[in-house]
Length: 259
Image 1 (tube, helix red, strand yellow):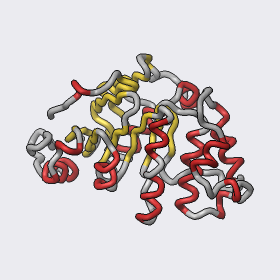
Image 2: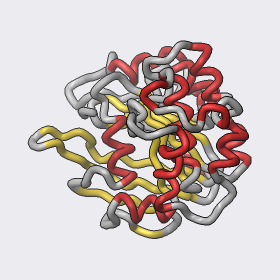
Image 3: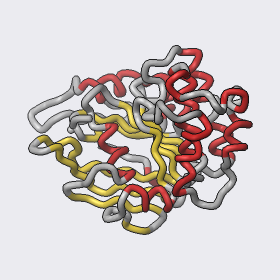
Image 4: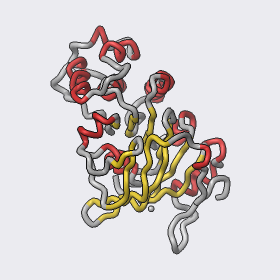
């Protein structure tokens, strides 16, 4: 597997040889990646590839079997999830996971519990999502899927993350809503946030990411800049079409996990 790490900026996150198990099932198998500050990187792959497991392990919600998670030069592998939030690693989980009995504003206040100093506040989130101020007292359970996703992003932002982990932003949302959500990325980057997103929508990931990684059965089978990855190589890496006795292997232009 070829990589192109030479051009990556000073690392904010380094994942080294990360292996994770769910009981006897190996969900991630020696996964490594590097993310520079200010980048948007995407992790693609089919259901069960290990994408969500990777984000949960980086965020501290899942313990690694072996391997290292380095954040801003420090090993955070032994830190609890809330300590990682305080350090600047914040995740928007798959399915939003809002508190349905709380209002929009109360959900945002939950996100500020372990907030770092920084540019994001509830007021700035209201500026980013202009519909929220008028509905700040509405229960989260009364919102549409897209609105709930916006509140989940806002809840993460008020913690002032340095690294924002976005898990399946487009899941269950109409394409026009997905586009609106992704249109917020430039403002996030301008505020100094680095983004690692998990996405099954390959075209969306290729559109917004500076670097893409493909997971298959817990292994990275392809990685590189979107412009240098051919559709055929992505398809082979995504589905494991070139798998042989040693498992799937794919490289840019040439053409293993549970969530």
